[in-house]
Image (cartoon, rainbow, N blue to C red; front, side, top):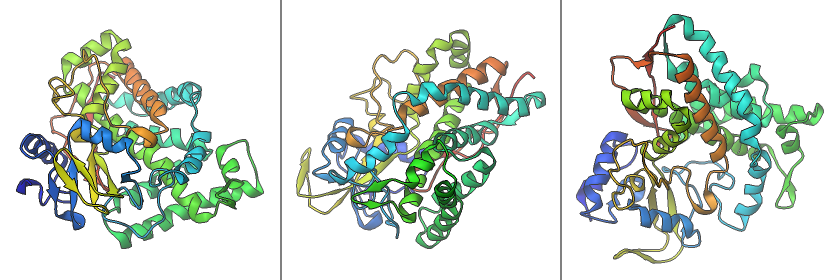
Length: 388
């Protein structure tokens, strides 16, 4: 065991220090342990993380994938194992299909340009607050059928709810506020049906019963968490990683076809979520470390994404990386269903930013990554300047 990890959690250690710690202990102690959250083992190597993500029979997603445990219903599909997972995952698959990203690309591009129009004359902006935050929220709300006028309120209540992840009492209050806004929309669809996903959701059944208000809350929170929260983090990180490297910025400006490669490298280097928890259903040995049944295991995507055995020069941002099998969208049955939509949003946002904002440069202050709402890593602000 490594004493250096005994006090680690996303509530005790910042993202930058966490990455340094993962790198330091990886070779010294392949399966370290932390005493936080009543104790858990940590999987940091790529092969261990991948194997655990594939083996849901041993590494269960139930009862919850974040710590501390909260007094809430499980997040559909994400915090379920088969056979329950299959039926609930189908609800998300009805909203996001292989055709979704191509069908929504024109809308996303229009949204990005709408926001650029609002700040371009100033020659400066906070690109997190003025672009990376609103665009994913508008995209996911349009996907499910929430009107544009309601998007700011939905976004506000969702952000407050996610930020309260570490405080059970506060989380309950914030979840109620989120529910008051979103569930009302589902009820409205029963009276005034439309051709949208919320209308279909209002009449869905699951496990032999109709969906209820508690189901709507956790389903819509899952949509907003994955479709807005994490995409905002990734978009802000993409802007930062590209703009902090003038050679990368210039290469992508000259050849926008490489932006897709940059997106994958960003996702590897700066995953919005550092990892999730699993609980063992039986005794298991990982490497040479025995892990008892009923024990929590942290599956570290951020650490796996920087495993030198899998990625050459893992801490570098490279546009020539040939193979990039990062874990930032999960793996196995819990792979993020909205991965293609998020990739499209990131690509389109960077394409338009580089096209429309010449001379784009970061402000003088270095942004600091922080954890919020569990293992969610994000930049709160990113001032930039450009030629208007």
